[in-house]
Amino acid sequence: MRHSSKILAVGLLAVSLAASACGTTTNDGKGNNKPNPNAEPIIIDTKGEAVTPAPDVKGATKGGTILWLEDGEFSHFDPNQMYSSDELAVGTHLMYRMLTTFVEDPGGGPLKLVGDLATNTGVQSEGGKKWTYTLRDGIKYEDGTPITSKDIKYGIARQFGAQGAQGMQYIPDALDPKREYKGPADGNLNVPGIATPDDKTIIFTFPEAHPEFPFIAAYPSTAPTPQGKDTKEKYEDTWVASGPYKRKEAKKDQYMILERNPHWDPKTDPARHQYVDQFKFDWTPNRQNQTNRIKASQGEDAFAVMSSQVNQADITTVANDPEMSKRVIDGPTPFVTYMYINTQRVPDVNVRRAMNFAMNRDAYVKALGGVKVAKPATTLLAPIVPGYQNYNAYDGGVSGDLAKAKQALNGKKVEKLSLCFGNTPTGTIAANTIKESLSREGLFDIVLNPIDTKTYSDTVGKKDTKCDLISNGWAQDFPDGAATLRVLFDGKQIRAEGNQTLSYLDVPEINDELAKLSLEADRKAAAPKYAALDQKLMKDYAPVVPLTYTQCYKLVGSKVGGAYLSPLYNQVNLTQVYVKA
Image (cartoon, rainbow, N blue to C red; front, side, top):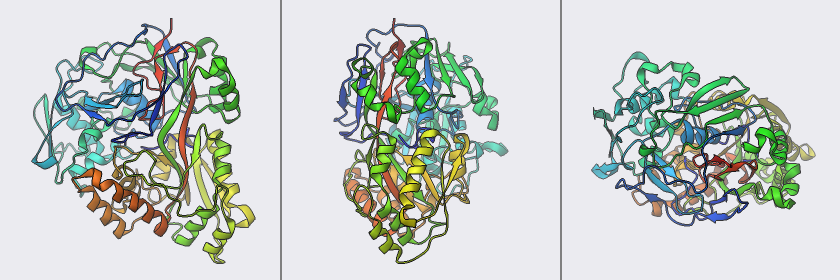
């Protein structure tokens, strides 16, 4: 999944089958913040044994408002367009329900994949080519209308068209590899590979086996959309809730308020609660303001959570303050930040290698606030990805090696390169650090190109983008090397817009190897092969400059209970949050 461009420089599926490196930190309201490594394999509820309603949170009280602080409005609210980490955290925890969902343990136990709208995680047949889901009884939209299998099919149909261009493409690509179906805009609802024999049954039949499908089904691609209320591009503002909270009011770029969905039934939901009356989203405070407000924890800010990291200059102060440190949510995350190199516009691999040698990762980490929020990265895969192997194909030390960079260039002069980044204070700090790093001794001429966060993903995701260098990040969408390498470096997936392949690398040899690996039934055996491909990509093609492995370091207000770090999204998990009495 994408980093939010608003928190990019500090920070589908942020888990691994044995997610030993992915920690969470709980906040039980008593200051007992405890690092909890998720060292056990994911539990997959194939039999439908998940408890509903979700078990009560000890000490939780009902009522009040929780405040979410973010530096800019989400890019998308339409479930079929969601792909950034912050959008997914709020969308999957509050706004929408999917066929499956993850139950996260604040105590750091194993993640559980369970049926959400469906009774279980799916029944497979035909060697993993066919998956059948049965919907729960009593599931409804915010207006009380029953949710049916046809609504889920319609939502997936939208994923094929314009209203799904910026969202996850796993299901469309799996159902229709040639992408001949163009969505429901012309009234065609004959979605390839989907059958709905009745209102409670939906059957997926793929041309190839997809054993990972239950993981993909946990994302908003499978959120239901009522056809009669599809307002196309306006659905970003008129979306229909299936989760515990619905839209009450909003003012563009200022705020949004979610209130209780009266037709959400906790007896049907194994993951979510509805403790607070409202969630208010303030889209105006930058990282510094978020930090200042929650440090003070006065008025409504006592009930606030921050989406950004603690501000760079305040990390030491917070860490050394006994009271504030009790309100810290911290731990490792699955995100890696990269400077993508647009290989269409920078085709010389030696130029790309030179950038890798020259990058001063030490300065970059320090600019972000130090090792509490970031650690230097040299690989494509995050350390929690199955099969991960540590290596450094361009070892220039932590500060970079300009002599090696010059040797790679071999006297070649490079024209000005445009570095695109999300236009926030943190994004600007990060971009300036990259520029200073690569511009030393006149090595490269970097021109900064700040882009509004609302349009950032759309802009850099267009194949004809004018960005030479792109600041962005990624976390695996499901526990497999394919969820990083195939998404980011499979040239066959490059399309006119909505790309995640931001290096725009298109090498038949790599494409073929990724396709071959995706068909291996033994995913454990495939894992080290992805690690080997990680090294090949960097050594032979250098499509990115890996920058950091993101660490989480956030604060919550003094009146926030039940908050803990989501190992999925590098955000506070909102399913158990309550207002402390």
